[in-house]
Length: 123
Image 1 (spheres, rainbow, N blue to C red):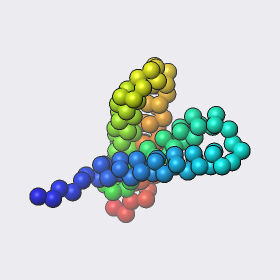
Image 2 (cartoon, rainbow, N blue to C red; image 1 turned 180 degrees about the vertical axis):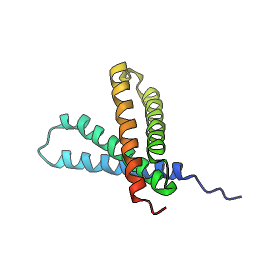
Image 3 (spheres, rainbow, N blue to C red; image 1 turned 90 degrees about the vertical axis):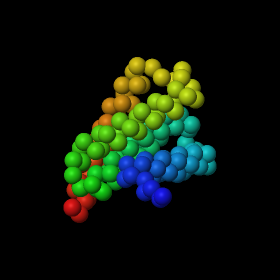
């Protein structure tokens, strides 16, 4: 029996691939240019926000309704995956300030992506 993955899982997969490609691109640019490695935290935040924005946009575009809710949900799911991965690999990186800051970024990026996805949908 063939099961088709849900729209949400497809969007998360695409966002993960998009993040990976952007990370490789940022690493190559910083390595081969005169940019300093201190840019990596900022680049990481930009990559996180853009991938969650893309994820929320794709999900709400596919459904064509409830963009803010679907985008925020995808932002929360992405945040939960991020926290689990961070806790698994290096739990010393988790503190309350970065936890709340990243949660707000994920919710905002997902919500804005969801709103844009409704505008792009054809339904």
